Amino acid sequence: MNNKVQSKEINFTDEQVELIKNKQLDFYKEDQETVLSFITDLLKKNQLYNVFLESNQLMDQFLFVQSSCQKQNSNEWGRLFSFFINMKPESIVQSQSEVKEKFDQIMKITQQLNIATPNGLDQEVQQKLQIHLESPQGKQLRLFEITREYVQKAIDIAYYSAFQLRKLLELQPDANTTQYISVIEASFLQMQIINKNPFNSLISEKETTNKKKIALATYFYLAQNTK
Image 1 (cartoon, rainbow, N blue to C red):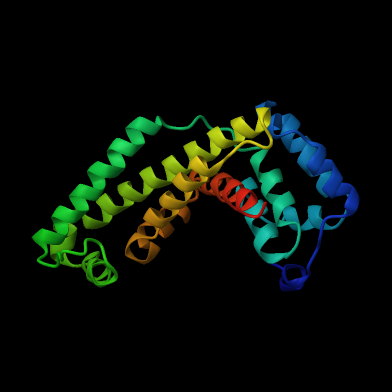
Image 2 (spheres, one colour):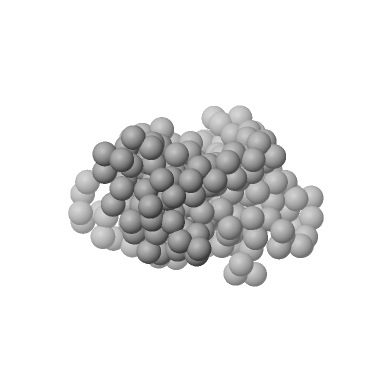
């Protein structure tokens, strides 16, 4: 990637900011070609479009531009993200049941590894779990796979909450969002298990579904917390 382009900060123009703010949250319901056309036409209004083309995948393009090319307009970028994130969420009841099941399995593994303490998954236990991710006993107990499944369910719960929050804000822009934000925050904490190793493995996959889920949850979490 061109380092000169990467280090250059490019911000939205006032016109671009207004175009994004004036686009309703339910724009994600439009077909993806319409959404993509709006986004590319908007980015063509300045040098952002050339930077946008440097990545191969749509989500990676957005993540690159957001993290490397600008320090402002974070709310506008988040809103722009949301327009092309429209996957149907997993059942919240099923995901909550599975995340509890996986947590119980992880706690059982701490006992089998003789590292359990009365403090649950405290920092000391998680440091020992991290060591066992690659140990023969840890592999035999499927520690990495189970913690990955646990984190995946946490991602699904955060996404479900963000998806429902977006639907609420479509109808009631000033609605109380505390319930949804609390669930998203709790899910973010769950994703940090074992120094984020399982989370990072899920996010580093070429398939971008989890990146989109995290992007939507992060946008609404930050947007609602900065009001």
